[in-house]
Length: 219
Image 1 (spheres, rainbow, N blue to C red):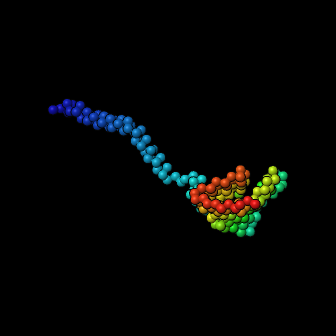
Image 2: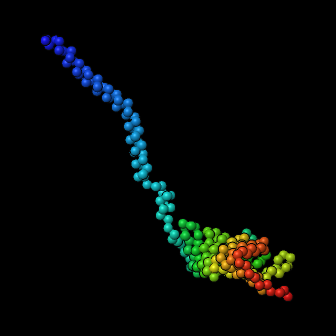
Image 3: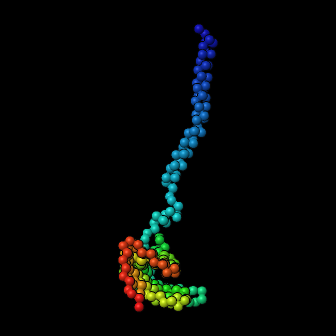
């Protein structure tokens, strides 16, 4: 056999190998976008898992119930647009908590003068107030007293007193609520109940639970 007859056989092998390489390269290029998208998805997931939270979330996570300022032997007074005295809050010590924006007061005493000149005094062993002092939760030997006064029609209103271990006092609207046993005294009359809702402006008292009362005869 001559060498000329063998030449085409040997020449086919490189071409066959080159064809296989091209086919493999074409297949790789065909699936390359899919592989690249998978790598990008894995990289995105890794970045999300390892990226630190935004500053607001960090601040919230680090927030603790600790006061940022306090005052001792304080008194805060408010006055109306006409300059007349409206209310006063005083106590042994007051602490502000920024995480809840509340004020915690030791031995609070609140004095408010209504539009008809009626004086209401509230006090307790401890108080928790919202930021503007319009609501105060009185805890421990809590009392709210509205002194006797005369209405516009000159009708006399007797002294009114509430006693409980918890009284929620809405200062601006002269309302009081409690879910604990309460004692109510109006003039010489006395009532006890498990719960109470009192609205001084509407002159309405709602007693609930076990209600008992002693009414003194009118003179």
